[in-house]
Image (cartoon, rainbow, N blue to C red; front, side, top):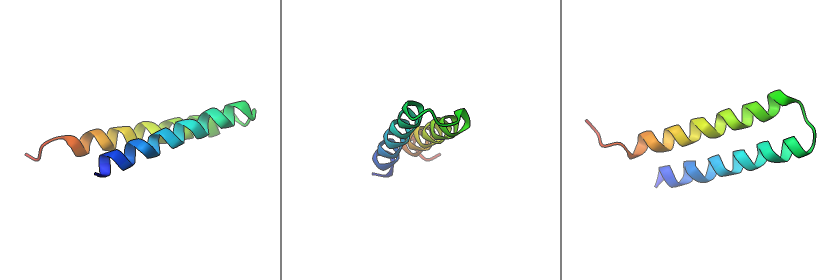
Length: 52
């Protein structure tokens, strides 16, 4: 369940990064959004792994 929520959050963050690119905002703002999206996807993946 939480992995689906995190994947949706990652999608919103990527959309935010693209939106900031179109608005010609500073590069670091875009990078932060993409890094957070990547972290959300990583967390979603880790939640799908079986418990040891």
